[in-house]
Image (cartoon, rainbow, N blue to C red; front, side, top):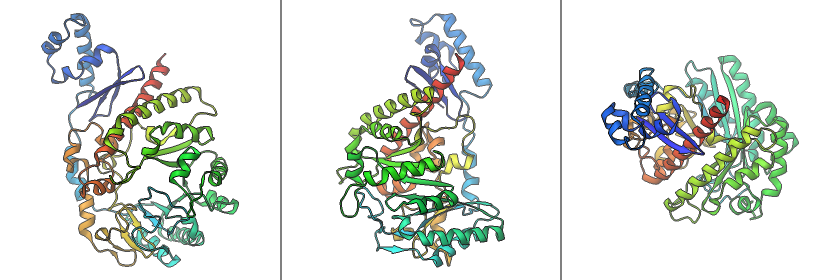
Length: 456
């Protein structure tokens, strides 16, 4: 199976099963899919008026050599791995701790119901947090490296408990030969020098939330009282990012139907000095005014291409204006392991969310949907049927993924988004898939252009 596309004056041919990426001249680009069945006669007949026989024969010889090297037209080598992935005994290696089901902002698109997660406002106690650390140690098997994300709502509204949990985990990791890596996700309103110092000493990564230009950010991310947040958070975030030497953080934004020109927001944040940027399309119901609609997709495609071309130019120049865009980061030399390629983030099996009261859910986006409650940090996983259902959530279990060239990059997409739009974790969110494919093409284009530049 191959996928080909042309962007920014470069022709790209991707061999899906080997992952090989080829920068093709026009002849190869035009005939590569026609020649997939190996019929020289078909190629010679179809392109006889466009290219000479010699040109076509030489190009087909090149394609034959690539096939021989298992870099083109390769068979599916992953299909038989599915049964082993589904049958594996899962270990928990990451927790999302909902430190605060409360928030000092009222983001209009918030999936967490303004921090309440369809319940009531609540802060996690140190007792629950410590029990969560005990739970992940007990259920992590032989895995040594464990991840814990402090999430909300707004986790800085319960910062003293964050510190208690970190201190407890550090003691336990020595006793159990584990290594914890902590992440904090924050809207930044409560950031100060003391918190920044603590975060830099104890958090492996920080996710900071902002949507871009002042008018866009303040429209969608107001304070609880309705005031804008841009002027408050920007200087704090700039200071934090610089204090972390512009690494080990992401400024994470969301674009909606109100800013389909979101490339301007990405570049605005880059021009503010941020080097690590992630801006995601909103996932909202059809009854909301901000949700992405099918008729918006072509415009979003153009924005991604515009952003990718600009990012390529900034990479080439380097210096102050250069930055990384999360969705354009792709590793073409190795990439994730087979399990990650097929099953994705591990929600419901390797990755779980913990509510302030200690309930376990498949991930943070399922919290509050009581039919997905899996157990508690005190009693363990009681609903093993839910875990089994998520363990079978992989690209070979999803009919829509069977013909999709991008399935080994997106791993079948987000289960929560799928459930929100179809009521089935095995039925991918269609618009999300379309945008993911475009982002991947943009990411691969950047790598291909950089390869071309290096070959000159």
